[in-house]
Image (cartoon, rainbow, N blue to C red; front, side):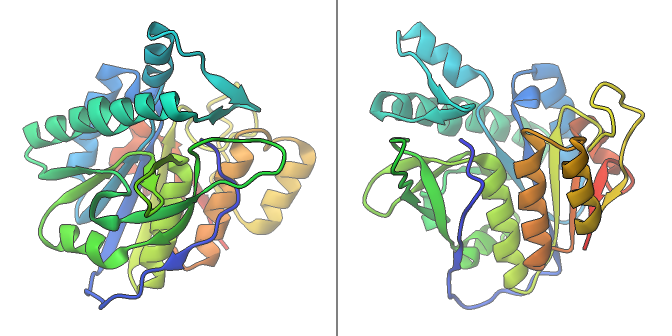
Length: 276
């Protein structure tokens, strides 16, 4: 579920020192392809240091909804999450996909723990308010519980978070995975950690020509971003990704990368780097 605008209230808890952390987000192009997912997890497992994996839902939730006779409601590419759809995305995101990823990481000797935002009160959100559209159970992030998330990390666990948060009143909320990744990165940075964010998707990075993988733009700063949008080179779904990236940089995240999942093993030299 897309969420381009959000606010974060950082949890005020006792700090636990941490040197650096990598926050990696994967999308449906990897989740929907077992071979690609397996290779990605192998590469993810080899990354040094503390890390968090964020994932969305891919096509599986839509396919399951169709099987059950529940028609997906989409507005401008964004999913409306009614009560029945929430049941499906919870089963798919928090159950099937999340636990499959955790099981595969365990097979790679990576001690992962699967989470939603409700677990350990990691991410709380509010139900989206929109005068024009009733988005149903869609959440806009309100707070990130850095303290308890770091308890997992400092005890050798790798959090694997799906795209669900909670409202504190017993309701789960469908929340955009890119926004979750950006929110966690900003909260961790605000807590004094060196944070590296990596968004993995189907292209090598931001391209001058979307049909030419050799047209990679290696570095984008704010001035260049404005020019790329004005020229139409950056458009549609890439805009909210880059908006989130620049917001993270402004909030203290050390580095944001956009690259192919296949390039994760060398992400420092791959993809597009977002800079000040």
